[in-house]
Image (cartoon, rainbow over all chains, first blue to last red; front, top):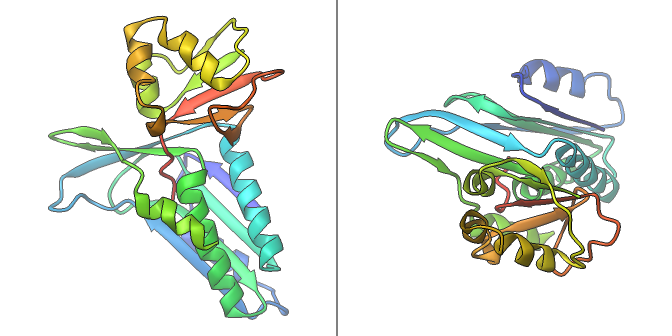
Length: 147
Length: 81
């Protein structure tokens, strides 16, 4: 497994290709990419993501290890950026490899649900009119209960 | 111990981290000490249901003991992903 927290952009295609390459026992690779979404009606100039250096890496490693153990994954990858991004930029990606697709899909969803509300990142949106911290959604907290 | 603030908690208090001398036995007792300092702390800690806390980089709750803790962080609910 690999967990990366970085400010720089990452190359989703290259990361996915390397992750999926050379696996003869893994029949399924699932990838997810999170992208900075514009505000409804447009106008988002930037999003800044703050994080807690040290705890971020620990939290992501713990969540990823849990996914690997629970779904017997062959491998898992989490890349999450921090700093300033613009609409359309890639924020993060998750990849999971398992012998069968159900485990790969479920583990990827589990990772996404957990890192949304248990990894110490905070998003702030900047537009011409305002700047505001993105509020956590109740649905994101509820999503954890199914695991 | 080191006390860290993130996101709007950091903005409200006006600094990202500070050293705090305390004998507080729990996170809640530390919060009470901080609240009593100045209005900006009272404002940041007004509604604990809007806050999360980590002790030594592990998420915990406000009843958690502080014995031996080196680092306490306060922040709003996380918005990763």
